[in-house]
Image (cartoon, rainbow, N blue to C red):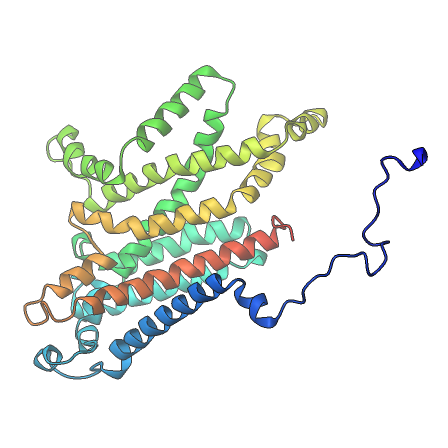
Length: 368
């Protein structure tokens, strides 16, 4: 029997009588598990059902879709006439009422151009030139006026959703190349360039955005010569660009570190210089790897544009808050305004998240 020492029987080869009996799982145990888990699941489902019933009742069943503020006061449901009365102000702020077709047209052109730009087939130098030479000047001319007989509208009267789009899109579009340059500077082997990059990134990331906006609005004019003023909107835009660039730089730096060093060595072996290696080999791989955090940063900055209220600008959420302070509707439509703002922010944030997943699949950065 010595030759059988250490032998372990294979349960698959054991006789049926010797194999352990496995209890067949019922559909109830498969979906709910143990009785304790089943009880927790039932309680959660009941809570969700109760909350959904209350929400549907408040949003639709008991809601008022047309009426006066007095009728909304005695109603137990949502007061949707508030939105119909304040919708134009929520979208466009203090922009002149008779000229609000201009920000509406600009917003539709912007969304349409973004939709076209999201198609990878359109990517290229021509698209960038079209945005810089055609789209951005056209959008600014529509908003500001002064050309083609359009009335001049100062930036202090801009507000609402077009302002949120402009601050977030222009800010992040300009912050992306600046952030890439800062990431390359921080990873540089030259001490002076690396110290400048690290210093800028750490200083900007060490303070909140509201502090930078405050500095750009209050402190910057103190250092300007007499008679020289900078537009309030431009100051806020530059502050957002600089702040976003520091965060983009750290995200891109993580992507650069994820690229194997062998890729750089392969570029040197082909006789490519530093900028050719970065542009053709390293950066394309690094940017593909950091698509999810970059999109997450874009979503966060799109929602953080509400901080520009400190410089006297009213973005989309601020116009909602201001509309609720109207004496006719004050204390009546509070949840309605925030629910509407939440739906708008959720729609565009979900759209950016879906596009991020599309880009991951397009560049094949996900693995099943």
